[in-house]
Length: 392
Image (cartoon, rainbow, N blue to C red; front, side, top):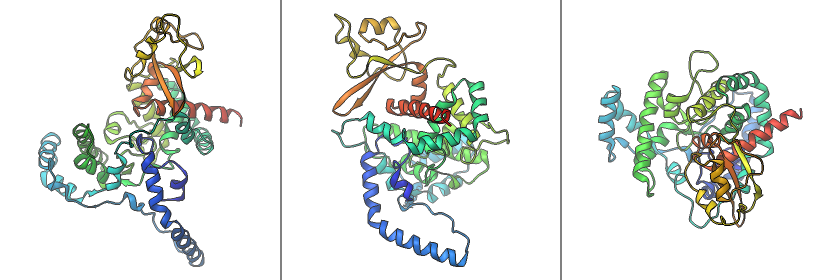
């Protein structure tokens, strides 16, 4: 783990349940911090004296797996048979890959839900992502990629600040793309997902992503074990899962290949394409405050409780302006009458909940990560970077 890992949020933004484990991971490495500092200083001194080439960076210990021979695990034979039949892989080839994949316990631990009783806190969550390091890095990223961002906005209708916000929240503009071998992480979760109520569905998802990893590697003519990413197997600047790479990633820099690991321009175009494919509509607004801002939604006489039924209705805008009005939801500004809306709640622990009125463009962002907190942090970070860039 690097010093940045201690200072920045652990994992990636896909870690929606990760806060308790962030503490555990830091505690695990604090005992080694002094030794690492001493070792680092001595190594640096030796390197300066000898002018030797710098050694290749190795993966942090919590990303390194152990031998498991997944080919012998329950469900492996069925997986091999199905993938061989669907995709033309040889069974010995698939068996060899599963044998080579390693079990990564930290990936399993990071997938476990947070202990019950811990309230959500939007303010604390926001501070993790809308902060000076990301804002300053976002300004640099925007300046360096202004042409590509403008081209993506013109082609897809996705504002540059939203693309900037997503890549900033995901990886701090390529600084934290993950050190897990994707084959290890995804194979582990495909066959050893933690014991949760949705375990079978999640294992089925990761088995499909394991198949997509192999297909993507074959299509890109790369070794599947050369891919690194998050503990969930997300890859590159925008943290696309292998299936999303195959379905939504595009060659936006014109070099004839899709490369989300090394091309920020491909990442920009791919994020924009992903959002459009998930319902983004050019020119539509994203989110509006209620007239209360933070606090309870004001209710009209005789409608004091009906607005609460708008909460938790999925990731789609379904209500008209009249629905909101009769339910007691009062926007702070007039809403376009031809759009549909949803009501989102941003809980603040023991403090007042913030309520916002969202359009389908907001919900398109939640398809990237199914979290209101995530989508709002993308909006806020993008806006903060735009404002900071305008001050230059």
